[in-house]
Length: 401
Image (tube, rainbow, N blue to C red):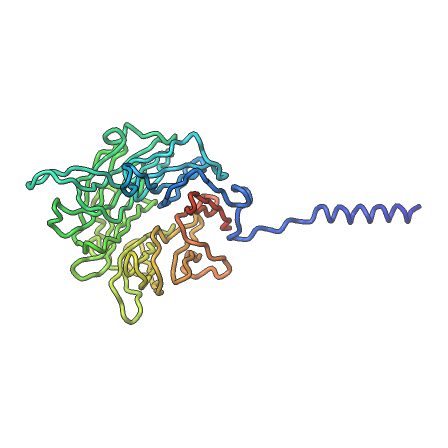
């Protein structure tokens, strides 16, 4: 009898051990099974071309994609690009309550702390000059409420125009309800050499100030970038000089004053990391690490293979020794991504993939490379990216840690 009882207990324990076999732990870089189907969500709503430029998060975890969609306005003519905004739930489902917006052409976007979306782009505008009125592609900022409707309390019925005739490499940041933008600028009829400007818009959409950095860049070399320091609201902006082709970072307070302690009276040259035959480099992306250090990503040109440089400077503009280069093709979107814990990603080389690094600049060799596309890192350190093709938008979410 006792042997039968022991046999029954043994069989039960074996059964329980099989039943409670621990599931394999997900590794960094794996797809998140709680998102979409096995980590991937597909939106097949659209049959025409959609290009995604930015992936953003609202405070409630919903995902917004911003880009352009080709729309044929006149039969027989080529379709035109219009702003495209689409929202998904935190699990990847289409948010049918959020209107898909199409107005003008968007270039960059950010989400405010209250969930409102600000988009920097261009729209037809007329600029008055001593030569008369000139039709241009003027920079414009739109703001949408958290529910996707246009925010009529911002600027003029939801938009603010900036008087410029140059459409360049636009960047937008938000801080404490204010909107900071960097945009290309040139006088009517393209008389002057183009330069970039930095402007601050108040929460109501009025222009508080505009900064024109004291150097310019060539018309076909418009790559520049800007970030707002989350610790104090300082504006860090960089561009390429048309005079000596050097790249320079500049730092301003959130009220537009020069931070004289940064570099030499507010300007700090970016160290050269190039191969023995250095070529002209353009600032393409910046991030500010939690310790205040500034990572700078530079490329030879916006569309051709060439040098790709990654360097780092202190919060005062001093080079800190991290300076490396590779040869490869640039990527069209932002290349630098920062995790909440200070780890960061950047693209370097010919593999078209984001590689992860620790805050001190050493590579995380155990982490799988992530394919680059417009992407965002969630507060819980999950990576969400968006791709388009075959009339569909595909979202995927991966675990980072």
